[in-house]
Amino acid sequence: MSAFRNKLAKKLAFSAMALALGYIASFFKISSLPMGGSTTLLSMLFICLIGYWYGLKVGLTAAVAYAFLQFIQKPVSVHPVQPILDYLLAFGALGLSGIFKDRKNGLIIGYLVAVFGRFCFHSLSGLIFFTDYTSISIGGAVWASAAYNMTYIVPEVIITVVILFLPPVKQAMKKVKELAQAN
Image (cartoon, rainbow, N blue to C red; front, top):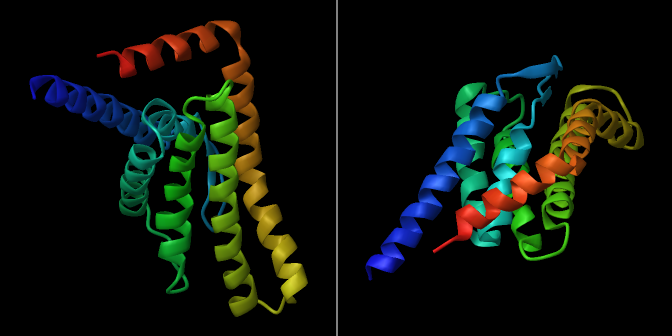
């Protein structure tokens, strides 16, 4: 039983550290948009790491916890469904990285899928906003929402993926995963 507790304690410790680093990184903004959304220094990566280390269940759980932290940090809501889409589901989608836990290049693939999930939920939320609060047509609202969300998500994705492809970073990520999963 103590081996199980030790493994659980290690998962909790690594996950808590990654959540804390993600939360702290979310304050280091490269750019910020007026209606919410910002390009940060790797904040999404830290959350995706949890899924990459421990799989989908733990990844989703941690990502939902992160969603609550983000909502507490700066709640932005102009529509009743927005907190669910923009926080719970969008940030919760970062846990999808856990699907690719054991795949070759699983961190990068998982990160891209997770961030795409986040993008989709933010875009859906934006679609609701643009159709309810502006005179833009539905077709225009789809494009406006997607374009708005791409302006802050795409730069962070590019920065993160470039950093992850650096050989020293690849080696470090491999080593940290080994440490996170070691018995």
